[in-house]
Length: 69
Figure 1 (cartoon, rainbow, N blue to C red):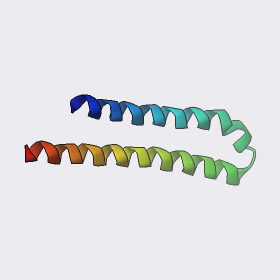
Figure 2: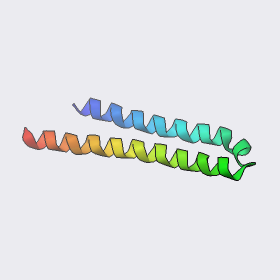
Figure 3: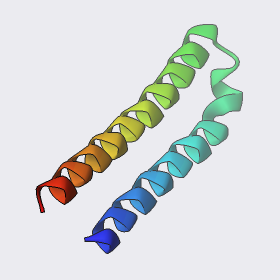
Figure 4: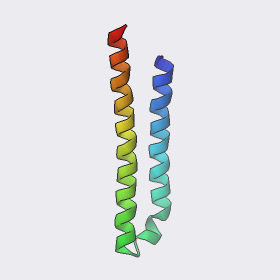
């Protein structure tokens, strides 16, 4: 079960890195229009926050399962 947890964590880290890389690529063109820049920043933050929450919920579920055993 530890392998599954490690793989999920690695997947969330890879997804976070991809959000950051895509944000870097679009930063210059978005910076020319303030509304686009705000949307880009908020979208990146929300995406990373969502991945962090999913990872945290996975860890909490794992701890509950371990306690039940």
